[in-house]
Length: 116
Length: 116
Image (cartoon, rainbow over all chains, first blue to last red; front, side, top):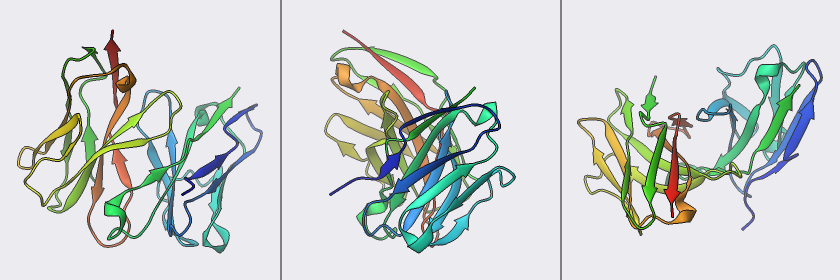
């Protein structure tokens, strides 16, 4: 079974530029999460989707970050304009309904962003 | 809101020895799940072990076991017969069991070094 796919793996941009990250969850997983992990810290939830609807985006900096999950499958996370403090790894994760798969959330390999 | 605290930023262990990583959490909920994830330099989150709060028996997975103390809100990870491949960041995470798919809340992590 294919895992959570993310691209690009690495991206370097200048501040005030824009960047987009793509995520393809495990087939059949209705719930998709985007986490931001700054160096030396644990991952922090940015946004959670259930199918194509947003469940929680309370920690998403909406003045510069946006995310969508059209058709309830793939998702994109966009940052525009980027700031230096956005340098982080952006982790995508997915899961089935909680009653299945013993509550396991599966993670992709992450997209590393460096803003210079 | 739930919080997870890992008080040991770094730990080291001799190969073949045993090490214990500490984790405490704060919640007012009675039903939840706890996890330990391993994150190697590649940054992909790998599930090590999970514990359901309603279970009194501590979870074990081969060389990995937990000491779950619900009253004390403590959830430590013990790694026995440590191997060089165990070197990584380890994150403790909490997941609410309330209805709907809830996200993981992570601690700041503990960096484990294994000395040959």
